[in-house]
Image (cartoon, rainbow, N blue to C red):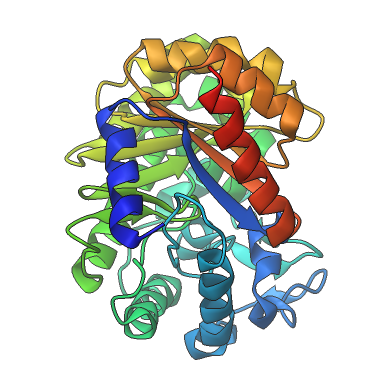
Amino acid sequence: MSLQEKLQKNRDFWEGNPMEYPLVIVRTGDVFPAKRMRANDPLLKRGRSVLPEDLQPENYAEDYLSEWMDFEKIGQDGIYTAEPCNGFPWMEAILGAEIVGGEDAFIARPCCRSIEELDRIVIDKGNPWYQKYLEFSEMLVKLAQGRFPVAQPILRGGSDTIGALVGQEEMACGLLEEPERVKRLFLQVAELQRELVADQLLLTPTFHHGRSIGFYHLWTPGNVIWYQDDLTALLSPRHYETFLKESAERICEGYAYTMMHLHPASFHLLDNILSIKTLKAVQINKDVGGPSVKEMLPYCRRVLECGKKLILGMGFLDENDIDAITSYLPNQGVALVLVAADRDRAEKLLNYIADRSGKK
């Protein structure tokens, strides 16, 4: 498939045009993004403190090029996208959390003992981690040479970031004891993400007059921003409306293409999330130990019925999952993001989806 054909298929997804089968993006290798980069190996040691000088962008160049070439060998709809050290907790690091290595991922340790202590946190563009993020972006632009887009990686929203900085229990208590302070902190996190992404956009050129959603390799016809807020699972619908909806709206403000990453544990908030008018798409994860794809499909349909685009997957979906999806959901406005062990498995899944969808 040519690049122009891929771009058109991605455009069709966003515009809700008729499609022969859902948009399909496949990634091979480890499900943990930090482990996909060999340059991270010396840092992913349990308890090892990670400092800004430990992340040298040039050390990652070979990893990105290898990923890009592997991605291009698969006949899929995705467009390879490079992001600053995906899987690294950028938001938490910029706001003062200590970052340490784990066996599979980087871990942000709390830097404050109470919600009150978080008042000292400010958005500082001179922060070494902020500058490191931009340094990565500049390196990737030079590396790409126009061959692939450079975009935003996973960036965590208000509940995730504040929960990391002060601890999940302290954040939950703060919702009850310091509601105005917590709401203000959530908005502060939203402003940080907006500043960081805006500065990255200034450094990174468009790709065929569009941008891309990093991590999911999904091209967009215009500027895009996206986020995850997994600790929303701790909130009731009323608390979400009171504390987080405004910050979610703020993150999305002014962007033509927006997306929120969602786990099934937050399905009780789906109606609240879908009421965000500026939210363009919802990405729903298939979690290990969580509900089956078949059990998630009514929630997926609700996303589509509310006029949002659906991005489903980011896990090891099998043929039974694909049967359920293609039987229950339309092709248009649906993207499947799959993880496959290797290229052979990826190609088999792609062929199965095309064959199965053609029999609708």
